[in-house]
Length: 396
Image (cartoon, rainbow, N blue to C red):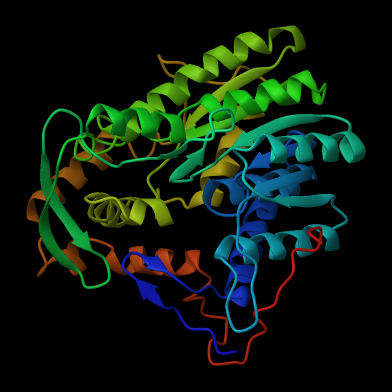
């Protein structure tokens, strides 16, 4: 079939397998160009199919020659209907890993469920024995709680008062004012349940009880802080409460892992174009201005550059992992530099529909967005007839 991007609001309903393969190959090439990392050799990535999770799996495999197990919840293709982008990413990753002689298997299912946790444990026992790094990179808007059976939905809302500020429709470039009503207590509780640290802790508890964590095992989860421009809707909003909970959970997990000399870390990463961030008012405008600024300063990074730097310069240096005063790894250090943030704040005041294409990097934002779905890669022929029925080799 001829596969073209089909949009509904801020979501692309189609994905391109050849574009996804290019995405994976480019990330692999970058990691290999940076040299070997003395990192973990048996790695579990929970949320492994897109974004930071995919880049973590690629960095583990092609930076440290690690065996990897990836967990994700993606939609395979059916005749005449494309798979989700994460499915095609995972298919491409496994193909490249197997060609390089690396162990790579994947499990497609609800990572919040007890059943998937047990399936992963059984696979680790059968194939790897133990794992020495667990990356937790889930980004789901909903969670069926495994104990109560209640379906919780996260909410993107400020806390305490209505939030109003600029935003941009990145498809049209129109800058407008947006207002978001404040959260009620139930919104906060649901968001913490979905996006906080409870499931991360459940994973580590289950893996430890099953005896599949190696001595000295590390686990890392990803978070975001961001600037004062976005804090009302992000860090001081419902999502921020969830991130606070996630970050507090790292200390609890570290305490539980003391007997096997393990540690849990939260890495605070850079603002990047993701499916989730595209739907958050204010964030696309901020990212557009941030991209322009960081590219001009030679500081711009995508997910693969961030994670390669996290592994090579933070987690696996051979020395102590550098942490901030709240015990977090800061790989957002370039984004949060004073000179970067001062420039973005200055541009923010000026930004409007007429000048955003000049003072911001709206084109870069759009390209990164379409790349998420396998589109807008220069070396892919999008007019060619493409087989949408692509399998992930380890999933029967």
